[in-house]
Amino acid sequence: MLYALLALTAACFLVLCIVPRALAPLDSPPLVLDRAEVAQAIAADAKSAKAAPQTPDAKALTESFLSLGDIENQTAQNAASPQIQRQSLARSFQKLVHDAGEPAALGLRSAAVEALEAALAMKISDKEAQRVLGLFPEALDRHRATHDGFEIAPHFVLRTLYKARWNIAVGLAPDYKLAPVELQAYHGWLALHAINLGPEPRAHALRDYAAAGGRQVSEARGVLAFLSHDYKDSVAALEQAEKESPSLRLRNWLRGAHVALEAVHGQESLGRLDSTGTIP
Image (cartoon, rainbow, N blue to C red):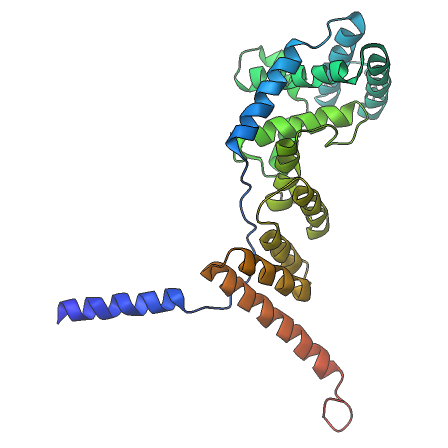
């Protein structure tokens, strides 16, 4: 009798697991990066950093970038504002590009990432680490890449976000001249995991993530559309996601999006009731 009861309980549990339910699609898929491409990007950075120019202008640009960290940490006396410092950095970068070429100038970005790694590994002094980091730790925490100082995002994402910080500092677009896997890391993290951002900027990042070859884009689009209360687009995106990779989870989310869409249409219909109480 006991075995029969256990078997019945297990059967009921399996039925509950298999039967689709209406669930709200609230969780974006995780960011997944190709390990081989990540390794190639890291190796390319190491090579670029080693070949970075050591001219007086190049050293001055690196020092100005570190000074930006001092300014952000308010450890520099009589310093310019961060905005003025970035304007100066932009001019210095353009001059270095003119004199040494852009690949050489971008080698300083790779060298900056190497300095970041040294700071995170505590291989440099606290004072120097503060210059390297500036307000970067706050940005990581704000975008949910870290929590209480612990890394949540893949470490490669932190490297890529630091490259974006360097780009912005010298007047470039955040994703300027990033490798495809770095574009996935940058835009993918913002789209899929930076829940501090609103649905609209996350949707914009998702478009760039898709253009860079990101994965599970339809599923993520369905989630972001649902969070934006665009249930029609959420249904369409989740239908596409379910076609691409069928799963019970996606079926449940699709049912949830349908329920939300029907509820909205029901409210709109109630709002159109005429004096006879019928829907025109």
